[in-house]
Length: 128
Image (cartoon, rainbow, N blue to C red; front, side, top):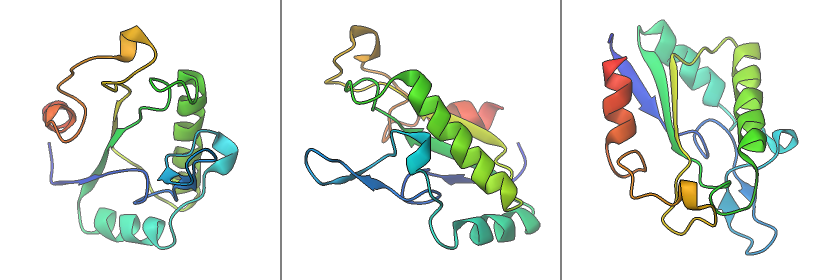
């Protein structure tokens, strides 16, 4: 793999949104709620122009917690990709962990090696 910069998505590339239940910032759960963080696209373009590939590694437990479907979370992903592309940014690789230890969905309730701070997503991306 060439030189790379690893980025989180929420709060780094896109703005978090407030959870209507607890008022805390979290990942967008709907594509219509996605907005880029001010300056994020500019920073990514500078990194790319400096010869770095950009890799996103992000925990996305919304489906596991029953807050959104996996389809909705993929729609959020596609919107982030679209907004970055419109600004001239191409992410080389995207890695997501959809697991959560307290998941409502048993198939997403896993003690995985991908969920940050575990290094699984970073290791997998470094092999690409």
